[in-house]
Structure formats: structure tokens, C-alpha cells
Length: 362
Image (cartoon, rainbow, N blue to C red; front, top):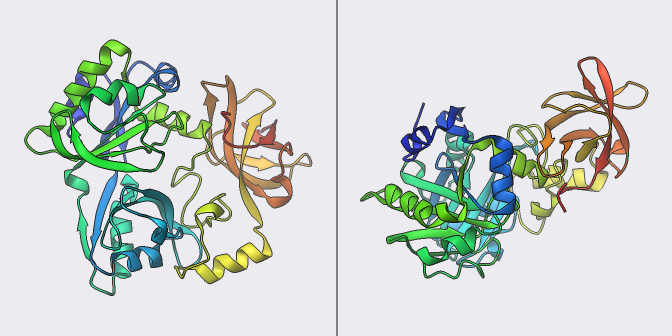
């Protein structure tokens, strides 16, 4: 297993550790519910240094990104980021990712899922037919996500960037906690606000930043947060998790990602997805909440009132904020309308649920 520069800190703090995407990662420290609540109500720090980062440079960098991603990266100006996905030739999803515009038409950073770093690198490289300079900086890049309604105000003394007024999906490069060249991004995977900071661990930068964040944040209730709470937080927002809710066999239109699928440009599987849009999808990813008592889990079967299979659960949990069981799953389009009655098969019992609008948390 790989370690991040913060692994020893997690262990010293008593974190429950486990393998995730080939990394030794913290799952929880004080308990998922406690950590979840800390992020929703105050602020928490996630070590997400396992994520992958690629730099694409050169006059054809934008052209390459446009061809391999579904969203329109030509809309990006320096300091702006965008959520997108990499379609495969069949219209499925190689991965979902963030695209950062560092220098317009010239320099971009792509942030990909930890489990897909090699897969994505190879996929993009296959399409690099015009000599774009590519750098996989994943191994030397640290990423901390400081999330929660008070995250920006807690961190403000550590940088000159106006964190409180940093608009969603924008970023600035600046000094943070005395470390130069830190990319500070108003993004995250929790829906609770906050920032993500990218930096290279050289000259003790990781130690310096971690120490500074907790020195200033600890007295204000800032807590380290594990991947367990990261999952419950993202699910309450209806955010997709690659490998669960979207994958190589699901299209962005089926997965509710039509908003990042722009047909104003050419990209992989554009024709397939255009036809799918025109004809209508046969299955849709929906949010649902349990009516009967029980917790839905990944790959549980979804049935209709007659007991016929109509889909499958992709993600499910007991929502700490709502105190009810919620989930995401694919169902036949006829059952995708809000308030539609569906049944989750749990240990040979059919438990009633209803389709609801996401995010689950208003």
C-alpha cells in the first residue's frame, strides 16, 4: 500500500486505517457520525492526497481536453475550474474529473480519481496525437480538503487570498501558511462549503501546512475527517462516486450528468450520446429515501410493487443529517419520477422506498 505524506499523522491521531485505491487511508477518527456533524456544522480536514493530478501544456492542450472530456473547457479562463467526465467509445464513463485552467489555451490541470490514475493517464495519452506536453504529478502533489461552513474563516489568517469571497469553482495560487505556490480552490465533495489546497511536499511543506491548519483550527473545533464521513457527506448531496454510481457501463445522461455533456463541440462518443438524448434513456440514476426500516447497500436489487426487477442500488447509507436511510440507484425510466414507489430487496424482504429529488439535503 502507498502512503500519503500525512499517513503517520493519521495513525498518531488514532485513526482507523484501511486500504483505499491502493493507499493506506484514514476511514474514521472519532466516528463517522461525529465527523460528519463536524463538517456540516463547523469544519473538518480531509487528506485526499491519493487523488491524481495531470498537467497538460502546449498550444494543443485545450484541443486534447475538448476531445476527451464531455464538458466545454473552452469556457474556462485562468482561475476557473470545471467538473467533467471522460466518455469511452460506447458512451460509458472512463472517469469523472475536475479541469483547472492555469493558463488559457496553454496550461491545464486535471484532477482524477485515485483508483483510475493509470487508466486515465493511458486513455488521455492514447488521444494525445498533437504533441501535448503531459506530466503526471500525482505522486508529488498533496491535497487537503478543508470543508464546512466555517472552513474559510478559520483558514483566512493563513493566506492573503480572500477565502470567504472565493467563488465556487474558482481558484487562486498564493502563499499558504508560509508555503509558496499553493493552489487554493473553492471546490469540494461535501456540499458544506470550504476549500481544497494543492501543493508539492518539498522543504517540509506537508508538515508545515498540517501543523498550521490545526494550530489555528483546533481551538475552533476543526477536526480531522476520514473517508467514511466523506462518503456520507457526498451521498447527502447526491454526488456520484466513480465505481459505484457511474462507471464504464453507465452514460453521463443516465447518471444525471447531462449538464456536463455539451454537444456544441466534438468529443468521444458524441454521436452515441446525441442519439441517446434524442431517444431518451432507458434507465436513470435517482435518489430515494426508505419508507420501511432498512439500509440500502451497493448492488441491492430494486423491484416494483409486483416484484419485478427494475434496477439496482449504487450507493446507500443512514444519513446522519436527516436521520433516515437514503440511497442512489438506477431504475427503469418509468419509475424515475419524483415520489415513485420502489422496493429495495434486503435479505429476501421487499422494503418500500420512494424516489426523491437530490440533493437530499436542502
